[in-house]
Image (tube, rainbow, N blue to C red):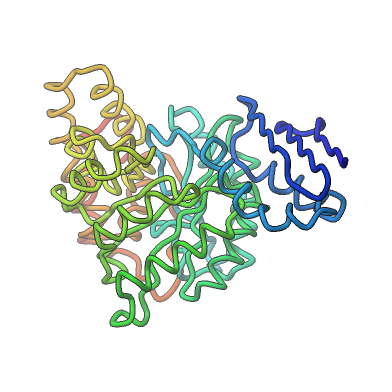
Length: 370
C-alpha cells in the first residue's frame, strides 16, 4: 500500500494504490481555490513520489481533467475592461502610469481585468513585456479581481508556452485568440485541434477569443460548441457582434457550464438578454462606471433604464473601436483624467480634427475634463 496526502495547499488529494492497482482517487475542492493551477503545481512537483505504481501513470491524464470540471470553473459574470498598455514617449511600458490608472479603475466595480487583449496592443509587444505586464497587474489589482491574460500566438506550441507563463505570472484564465496568418488553413478542424491542445496543456482555464475585425477569422459556431465540452475551456469572448450567432452558441452550450462574454459595449445588453454573463468592453477603460451600471440594471431587471443607457453608449463605443480604434481609446481616457499616452508604432495618433470629433462625443458624460 502506498499513501500520499496533500494538506498544505487549498486542494487535498488522496490516492490509494494496493497491489499495483489503482483503488481510489478522492479530490476535495475548497471554496478558496480560484483555479486548478495550485492543484496541478502541487501534484506535478510530487509526481516522482506518487507515481510508483504504473497504473497511476495511465490514469494521470484522466484524473487531471476529471477534477477540472470543479476546479477550472470561474464566475465570469460582470465587466472586464481590456486595459490599454501605457507607453511613454519612447514607446516603452510606463509602469508608473499603469499604477496611476489602476488607482482610478480599482474604485469601479469591475469583476476583473483583461491584460494583453487587442486594446492592449499585444500584437506589438515582446513576450517578456507581456509576462511582466501580467505580473504587475496582478500586484495592482485588488484581491478577488480576476486577471484574464491574452496568451494567443500563431503557433500552437508557442501558445501553450505563453499560456503557462501567464499562469505563472498570476493570470486566472487565458484568453486565446484564433491564429490567423495562414487564413486558408484555419479550418474548423485546425482551430478545434489548436484550442484542444492548448487547453489540454494549460494549468488555468481557457477562454476562446473570436475577433474577426482584427484576425479575419470568425470562430465557427459548431467549433465553439464542440470545444465547450472540454473541461478546461470555460468561455467565449465574442467580438464579432453577430447577435444571432451569440444566441445560438449560448443555447447550444447551455449544458456544458460554458459562459459567453460580449466583446463590445455596443451589443452588451442584447447579449445579456440572450444569456451572456458579462462583457469585455474597450469602452470600460473610459466609462467604466457606466458600463458596470448597465450590467447592474440588467441584473436587477431595470430593462427600460438599461435600454436608454445602452443607446447612450453606442456612439462613444463605436468611436473608440471601429472609428478611431486604440488611438481614439487612449485619447478619450485623457478626457477623464486617466493616462492614455501614445500608441506603439506603426499605429498613428489622432489628427486634431479627429480629436475634436471625439471630444464632442464624450463631453456629454460626467467626469469629462476639457
